[in-house]
Length: 147
Image (cartoon, rainbow, N blue to C red; front, side, top):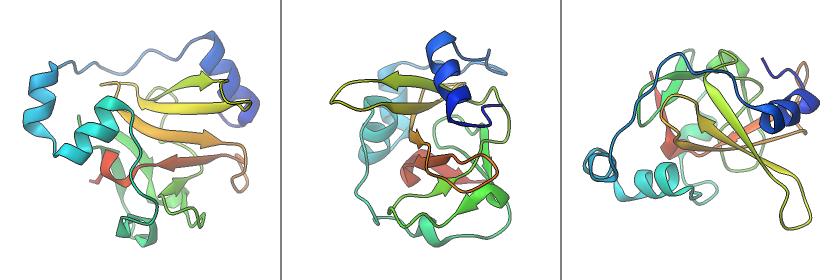
């Protein structure tokens, strides 16, 4: 599992782990299953408005999965309040459920996170999270579902 920022960058540069399974659907199928906002965020790599979801303050025990395919992505034990307006986690539940793609544009390094099973855009990961990983998986709430 990407346990620190250097490992995230290495994974993004050298290739992601093989997913546990694959889910592939046509654009029409995704559009029929998702709301307009869910489709925009997950399939078109959009971003929801900060503080637009109460998921940021939801800290009940449980798991969070991909809105598109249901793959378990994060455990509530890794969730923390980042103050950014998006749900934040310190690590995914397994090394092969999140894929990383580095973006070195605009004079900075950002790492996009995708569901490794269905390629849904989830958000980004940053190197400013709490111990033990020091990572902040900043996720779009509409890309997640509480399982």
